[in-house]
Image (cartoon, rainbow, N blue to C red):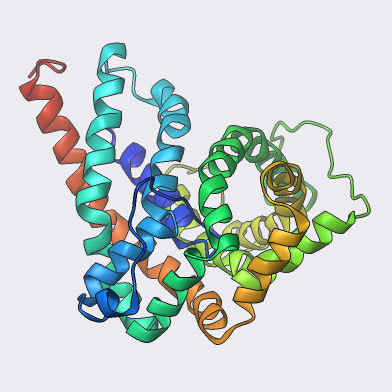
Length: 308
C-alpha cells in the first residue's frame, strides 16, 4: 500500500474525530449513569465519548468515499481487494483510535468535563446530532472532491497573480459571495462556538507538510502564502458547503440547543482545546498510518490479494 494513501485517510479520520460537532449514536447503547461513569478509567471514558458523540461511527462513514478517491492512486491493488481493505480499516480504527486519543484528551480535558460532555450527547439535542451526523459526514465527503478542486484552483490563481508560479493552468472561476440566510448565520455561530473553524485552521499545517513532498514545483517561499489562502478558503466556503446539508438533518431549534451546550463550561473547554487535540492527533497519525499500512499489506498478502 502507498503510505500517502493510509496517512491521508488517517488525517481525515483525525479531522472527523476532532471536530467538536462530530457525532453518531450506536443503536442499543445503554445510557450511562453517574455511578457507572465514576467507576470507569479515563480511557474507558474516552471510548464512551467517541461512541456516544459519534467519533468512531463518523470515521467509518468517511472511509468509503476516501477509498473511492484513492483507488486511482493505487493501481497495484486489485479491485476485489478494496472491500477487504475497508473491513481491515474499520477493525483497525475500533482497536486503535481510543488508545491514540486517550492520552491526548487527558492532557486537555478533565474526567469531570468529559462526563459533562457525555451527558450532553445523552440529551435530546445531543442524540439528534448523534443520529444525523453520519449522514452529514457522508454527504460532506461526497462534496469534498469538488471543494478540493475549487481550493486548488484558488491557490493556483493567487500564486500566479502574485508571481509565485509561471504558466500554471487554472480555470477562470471565482468564489461568489452571497448573503447568509438565518440558518447559515446560526450554523456559522455553531461552528465558531464549537471550535470547528479553529480546528480547520489547526489542520492546515500538517496538510501542507504532507503536500510539500508531493509538490516539487511549488517554491518554498510560496507555502506561507498557501497557508493563508487555505485558511481564508475554509472560512469563506465551509458554511456554504455545510448549511444545506445540516438543514436537511438538524432544525434551527435543535441547533440552538447544541450551541447552548458549547456555551456551557464543559462545551467551552472542549471547543477551546479541540484545535490542540486535533494538532496532536494528526501528528500521531504518522505512526498509526505506518501500522495500518503494514496491517493492510499483511492481510492482503496472507489472503492472496497481493503477490510477493
